[in-house]
Amino acid sequence: MDSSADNESWAQYQSGGEKAYAGGDFLASARLFQQAVDAAERDVGEDSVELAECLMGVAKACVAEWDYRRSEAAYERALSILANPDAGGGHLLVSCLKDMALIYELMEDLPKAELAYERALRHLDEHNRAHHGDLVEIWGSLAELHRDAGNSKQCLEARLRVIALKHEFHGSQHPETARALIEFAGICQEVGSLEQAEKSLLAAFSILRSSFGPQDRRSTACLQNLMELQDRLRKKTELTRADILWAG
Image (cartoon, rainbow, N blue to C red; front, side):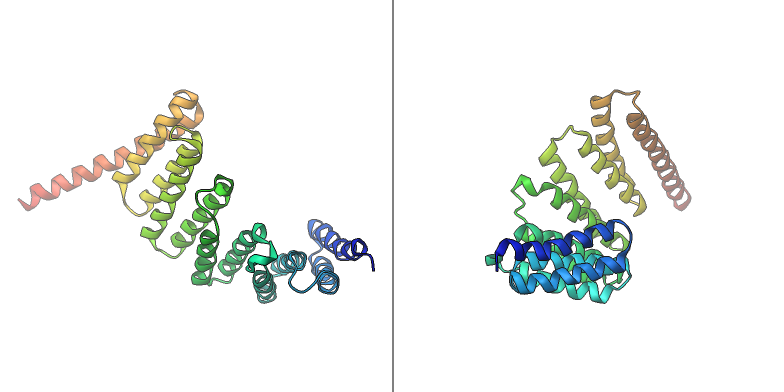
């Protein structure tokens, strides 16, 4: 049988699954993706990247139907294929791991989600700028994961990695670096680290003022946050001084 015809067979099911998914018919999408899996197993092999792609289609359709266990099983099988260096599926491996982490978050299995993110990070070459977007996304997701779990120290550490990556990729005076600093400041305020938040907002405001001018809405919004924070710090200092005088 002509191999191009074979490939078209699974590809047609895959295309149909994508169309059904985009149209919101998730049951039909899952069925078509499963047919793509069956065709890919038959036509291109059980260890093929094409099969892994079809399995990832099944998984995402199952997520939309709240069938997390079936989705997990499909992702696990896809991962077993993509993890093989000889398969040539490295470009899909990180996507698969990120998707799996989200599944575990939905299942409220935070340790497994963290492991999936960390495995994705290990796979990526942090010195390869082509992976910058993936690295920022994964570290940001890890920060939110730790935030939800109440692990403030790990959350702040992950956010610092995001700042470092944006600084490395965009430069110290880029608005994206300012955005990361503002996000970091917000988390610092949540955990009561007001001095660290102030330093971060001061740096962010300096970048935004230089990039857009002092009257730009982004600059003024950052300045407003900074002024409110500094007011909180003054009140905190006054209360501390009053406590010292009272105790003395």
